[in-house]
Length: 119
Image (spheres, rainbow, N blue to C red):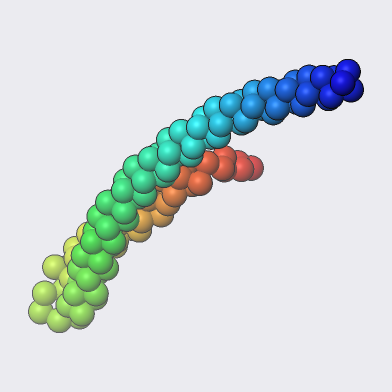
């Protein structure tokens, strides 16, 4: 009889400690889910910023290089002066657009959560 009482007492203690562990693991699981949701929201914001800047950079670069081509086609013809101006202006605009394109990727780096290595 004493063995059964002792065994029941041990089982009660074991079940009680197991229940406490389950409660603690549920709390930690909830915290991890909340952290994941915050990270996901941050990634979505950074991707939205990256997309907008990428599209703007693509548009500016396309316009710039199109103007450069048009200026190059005008060289050596009647409107040589205008062609030279278009070459310079289009080149500068194209480079600016390309910079905007490359710069848009910094938001993707932020989305990954990894810090960039600087040399």
